[in-house]
Amino acid sequence: MERISVKQEVCHGKPCVQGTRIMVEQVLDLLEAGKSFQEIIGEYFPDLTKEDIKACVRFAKELVQNEEIHVVEERLAG
Image (cartoon, rainbow, N blue to C red; front, side, top):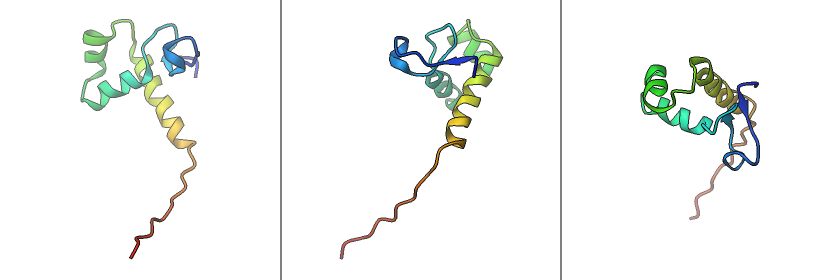
């Protein structure tokens, strides 16, 4: 992902939009809150582009897509 970078010295190694200190997590939080791309750019992060926001979503999707989930059944005592 060329638009997303992970560098230990930037935001404690959290994924950020390349060349900024804007974390993917921040963008996803705004999307979850119902903010539109235009609102995110206009009110929060004017340095972002629509492509940057799409890259954040794509980054999160790829993390989930490549995650292997192991279901562990809980047994109730009794």
